[in-house]
Image 1 (tube, one colour):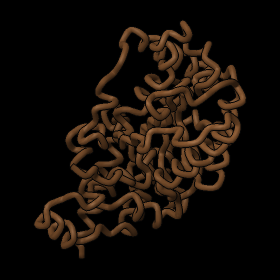
Image 2 (cartoon, one colour):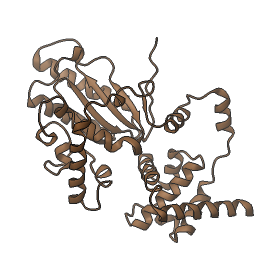
Image 3 (cartoon, one colour):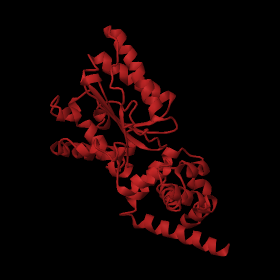
Image 4 (cartoon, one colour):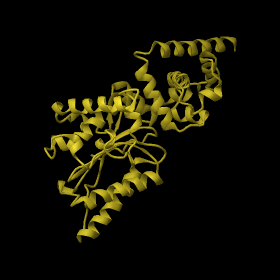
Length: 324
């Protein structure tokens, strides 16, 4: 049976696994590990993406990547082709170095981001190569703990969920990772829905709709649905928060601005707006919208301030619709 094409979603979180052909070693010494990291950094500069975690094992590689504009497939093709050429030339070999098809699982960010970073960092411990994750040189764990420079790893989006200060966040993150040692192998991280999607049922359904994997009748319903008035939404968010539309769309990290931005994005998502449409209106990157949406969903459970702001925005939108 033919394999389905990989799901490519801008702003999507991907757990990527690629193995050596026949599970053979793909790294001979430190030079090889450093070479693939340099190639990864070069691709990140040319085809930007967010890299939240990596672990280079002797015969396989784990990456946790958030896609931006360039397709993950394009990034991986260039990375693996470049490393294969280097490796074959260095060791005087021919043929395929990697298995023909890497595994790329699209994951629900708010549900699995921290869990996947932990799982990836604990690979060397589960393989009994080291006793503690910070003892392994070829993963991003040491960067999270401040033992190495972050380099090409984007650690902030993960660490900010663990504490207000970097010191506290690192301490809590280290404890979180160490607590995962007793969990062992997590088969669910490999056996995702249809091998491509990992998340709650709602996330799976929403993703399929975004990429067109929906029944024809459902497709017509989505197509005929009126697009939300995003400009009116920004005005409503500004009135509800006491800020200006320009402030909400700015890059300010003031708590009030961030909360207002997240509330507006949350409401826009509920109204049916795509991350791409919201990003275009705000003059932002869709990956930023994706991260703010995930943060809003997480905070909505406990933040009464955010809940009240969302309600105010919705009420202003309804009032505006009634006047029209």
